[in-house]
Image 1: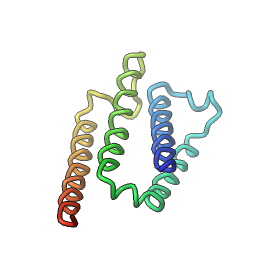
Image 2: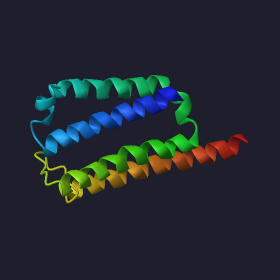
Image 3: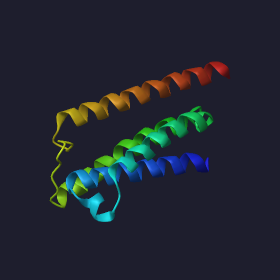
Image 4: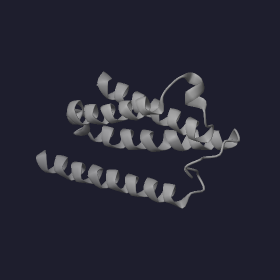
Amino acid sequence: MKIYWLVVAILLVNLCTLLVNDYFPGTLAALGIPPWILFAVIALMVVLSGVTLKPQRKKKRYMIIFPVLMIVVPLIVLAILTLLGGESRNSISLTNPSLWIAVAVTLWIFWLEYVRASKKEAEDT
């Protein structure tokens, strides 16, 4: 279970750091962090989560927690970065309809998985 939260935390920190660099270019360079390292760590965490976190995904509550955290936290970061006066270079902003479509589709997919898991759990008992 500790690995689950570590993976989630690392993914969120990396994603938020990339968003900060998008809104305020040069942030990573000022910190001395090459952007490719963040992408490599995200890829590693995705692989690690697929391999080691399978038992956690069977628990329904994790099927809700993970997508909500991975969507809500970056949206909050986007709002804060916008309020701080940042402007996205990649058109990732709260006013972009594509972002909201992606959020809706992602939540819908996770909701369908949750419902499917609920039905399977009810059948197993």
